[in-house]
Structures are given as C-alpha cells and as structure tokens.
Amino acid sequence: MTQYEPVIGLEMHAELMTESKMFSKAKVVDSVEAAPNTAVSPLCLGMPGTLPVINEKAVEYATRVALALNCEINHHNIFARKNYFYPDLPKGYQISQYEQPLGVNGWLDVELESGETKRIGIRRVHMEEDTGKLTHQDDGTSLVDYNRAGVPLLEIVTEPDIRSGEEARAYAMKVRQILRYLGVNSGDMEKGVLRVEPNISIRPVGSTEFGTRTELKNLNSFRVLADGTAFEIARQTAVLQSGGKVVQETRGWHEGRRETFSQRTKEEAEDYRYFPEPDLPPLHLDDAWVEEVRASLPELPDAKIARYMAKYELSEYDSRVLSEERAVAEWFDTACTELAEVAVSHGTTPKSIANWMINELFRLMNEAKLSIDAIQVTPAALVELISLVEKQTINNNTAKEVLAEMFATGTASANIVESKGLAQISDDAAITAVINQILDDNPEQLARYLDGQEKLRGFFVGQVMRQTQGKANPALVNQLLDAALANKK
Image 1 (cartoon, rainbow, N blue to C red):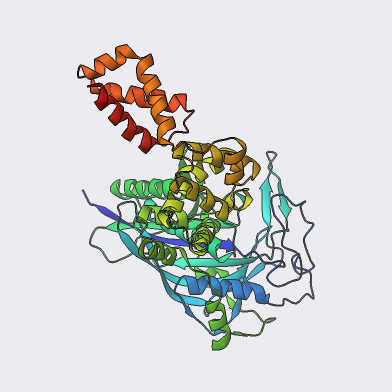
Image 2 (image 1 turned 180 degrees about the vertical axis):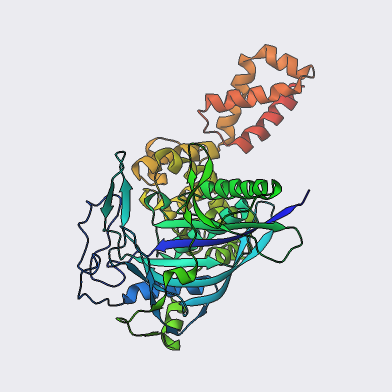
C-alpha cells in the first residue's frame, strides 16, 4: 500500500493592538464585548467617496513582527485590492498586500516534543484589514457586526515545511508567544484576534510534487489545529487509498463530531482579481526607520532562554518555564537585579529565585487565578524571603507559610516572621532540652531504636519538630539528636 507524506503550510491572521483601524480613525474595540456596530466609520461601512489613510502604528507593529520572524523587509510596499463579495465585507474588496508584501523569506526555529528543533520557513508577512463578523442564527438568518471591519490584520504565511499536526501546533504556539512578547497581539484565540488556517495536502513518500490541498478555516485553538490537521491527513489518505481524488476546498472543523466538513471550493489567487489599490500611494520604509524598529525589539524568548542558561546556570526546562510569558520573565529579571543590588552573601542565587517562583509562587497564582502582574508579592519581597531561609532565620516549610500570607496580604516577610514569632530556633541548649524531653517521654520507642530499629530516628525528629511547632533548625535537630541517641547506647 502506498505510504503518504503530509505537506502543510500555515496561515496565521493576527489583529494588531492599535488604537485605531488600519485605514481610518475608527476606534479598535473588543469585538466580543463591545456593543455591535458602535466602532465604525464611513470607510468601515464601504460608503462611497471615502478614502483610506495608512495607520503608521500598524506599520510599525507589523515591521516588529516581520523582523522578529527573521524576514527581509521590503522597503517598497504596495497595497492591493482583493476582490470578493461577502456580507462581512461591505466594500466588496479587502485592502491587502499581494505582490510586494512587507516581509519575505523569514524563518522560525521550533522546538518539538521529541526534543528536536525544526526550522520552518516563512514565505511572507503582509498587512491588510480585517473583515466584519457574522453571527449565524438558528432560524437561518445572520447578523453582521462591523466593529471588526478595518482592524489592522497581519497575515503570516509559512512555506510548506510542516509535516504533522503537532509540528503545526508547536509553530503556531511559538508565533503566538512572539506576538505577545512584542506587545502587538493579545493571543486570545477565543476572541478571534488570532486565527490559524492550515493548508494540508498529502503525497506519496519520496515524491516532490504537491498534492491537492484543502484549507481548514479559522481554527480557534491549538488543540483544534493539531486535531483538525491530523483528521484531515487521515481523511485525505483514505480518499486516495480508496481510488478517489481530493477536492481543493475550504473545510471547517466540527467540534462535536470531531471531524472536518466541506464549506466551499477553494479559490486561487486569480479569483480575487488583485490589482494595486488606487487610493493608496506606495509605502516606502527607509533603512533608518527600519533599524529604529529593530532596536526597539525586546529580548525574545529564545535569547532569554540562552541567557538564563549561560548567565544563571538554570536548566533548559526552568529557563523555558520562566521565559514563556514576557511579564514572568521580566519579574524574574527584576528579582535577579534586586539580588545583585542587595549583594546577599548567604546563598541566595538566581537558581533559588527560579525554584521558589516555579514551585511555590506559580502554585499560589494558579490557585488564585492571577497573572504575575496582578499579585501583591514584589520581586524584592521574594528575594527578602529567600534570604531569611538562607540565613536560617526560618526554615523552608515556614517560608512557604510566610509566602502564602505575603501573597494574600502584601505584607513583608520580616514583619510576618516577627509578628507571628516564626523565627527558627537555633539555640543548642533549647533544642537539646526538647530532644531529651522527647526521649524521656517515649521510652518504648527509644528501647526499640537502641535494639536496632533505626528507622525510629525519623519518629524522634518528627516529635521534636512538632514540639517546637516546626521552628527548630532541622540541621541542628539532626545533629543534636544523633549526639543524644549516641549517649544512650
């Protein structure tokens, strides 16, 4: 039986978070929460006599993305009319870019679940305007909301380098991460500000010719992207193995049935009758302006991961976790800066900060459903807490309790320790007295220990910690207990 290889190219559409629309002064609003048709202009509605004007901030945001995706920037850009008729496109055409897009020949390295890194080529990054939004009713009618019409939209198109749904998901997730790092898109797929459309075909293994492709339209989650792509690969394989032919078409994803379904035959570029937009002059981007935009880019995730591993000797896993969200990475960086400024000399390190963030702070954030920019614990406060542990003022378990109160109230760790009397007991005489009392109160367990049941040592440690309400210095407890037990032999 013939074996087939999937060939997948991905289109991603990202709304840009500008204040106004791509070609008009109409405000950009949340198209889910805002009242329908309240953020429109004559241009959004396709009124005769209106003229578009290019949004400079949208061009800047688009250039940031193209540079972050390693694209070559076309300094001479031309907008075009993409003609098609649909209720959510009142002009009857969409202003987009075709022959001379903003960015070309880019690439992105993607980490796969296997541990391999794969480079995905990016064919083009171009600017356009979004369409309106249709809401289909149960009675067969549809409602149109033009709030979204004209919102700056960036289309990112890969080369056909992807070979599975999992690769598609890994690529799309990384692009989303970069868009969020750049501050140009929220990444909220449920609201439609980021949409993913794979073009999928299969061909016999070893063949260099492309098969007939289908496009899955407007997928709104990474799971659906992976599942829908996997289903479509299997469907096309079954069609060819049964002697049929794959039809070039646009398909949707039915979540309930977990299968794709046909929507319409797929258009080719010539069907859109592209021609230069007569109402917009060519857009020229000079070298100096492009370099200004390049200089404004933040440190991106891959660079952060490499820096954390090299500078702070963090593991790759910890570095990736801390770099996942820009706000989290900046919080960690601030904590490391605080650490350097206070010059703590008793063991606190960036690795300690990473451990406390990943294991304890993130747990509290997840329980409270709060993002890191909404919590009351500051980077400096966490450094102070860790230093109390390193100085053996409090132990780890007590520190976890203190962090929980810091998280809930914003109170400084030192104040909590002082007000609640949580400071660790490190006095030899005080701990020895408790140990002797424990041994005297438990003669049966002591006799069994002396008779060879050495696992009972843990029992005595537990009793001492219970008696001191967890305040005794654990290392000192173990040292003094061993001495006391040795004296009993």
